[in-house]
Image (cartoon, rainbow, N blue to C red; front, side, top):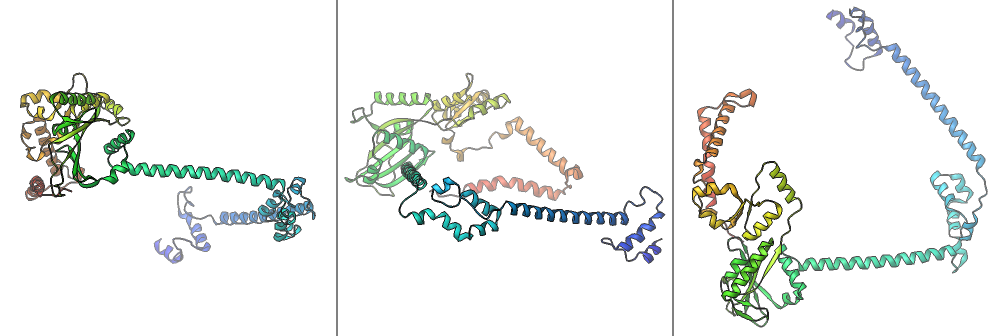
Length: 465
């Protein structure tokens, strides 16, 4: 059979075979026993020729129909076409000799006959400008109305342009004044509301040194050179810390008086009142340091004069309270760790639903004084933890007591066992292959070397900017 096919059908190609070869192949298909599948993969040439003839006949009929319809439309269009055009009365009253509809029909229909009737493009342009050319300086009523409307639109546009420019200038000026952190921006706006002149103060003083806010000191300072000579230090930061560095205060009359116990208690009560209202408190202070100061000198830490205590509201972002409620409903315990005043933290935690009646809010120093037994009983109840940023993390051994936590030891042991089982016994299923004892040793060694390398890198000193 194979030799017969090669001898008689050797010229049959896999694709685009000739009609003669296809016909010979179709005649050979009588060998197939299954009559239903006999011609399944062979072309029906007679049907193919018949379909091609029908397609060509339909194409010819469609072409003739299109030509006849085009001739009929041209004939009807020629009957309706008049060699004379009369512009409407309202168009003539406006001073024109051709209407907009006529111009539109010529342009949209590409009507060359109408274009010739009107004398071409030049004549149409002349008809459109007749009122201007023939009327001299006199304007038609339509032109007068259009000129009036154009004047009004121009004045309105100019007004809006002036207003827009003024708003942009004001926005740029306000943004220039409010450069800095949100806290500094809020203090600046408060000073402007009190009648302060920011530009005058900035131009009259020269900034000599700036010490940015430090999470350990919880304060920042800036040294300026006064116009009359000498230097002055301004400081702001956490109320308890900056107030402790003050020995004088400005009273309600604007006089500088010693900071005695009564005034200290009054200021501390103000801080607690602000904090209980979920306000973040800041203490503002200054100190004159004479004329002996350079950029390399350190900013003093004591001897300031308290200007006042301010409370800043940090609004809770939308959706925080709802997110806390969703977490609680799912069985997740939500806790707050913050560096703000403990009363401020408690007020915000109550506002968003973290601190409950049975919950505990505790500060860092008090927490670290607890014994291990007290911590086991206290930690599950803690919902707000304060002053985490003031801890000296470098001096704390984070690995101390790690193996005394039974849950941690159990999780670590299960993890090791599962890793061994996956690698050694689940080869095809987990796409792994067993390791030799040398490979296990190298893998474990790399894992243990990670922590000492990280500790060594942490000892490398890094300069602060």
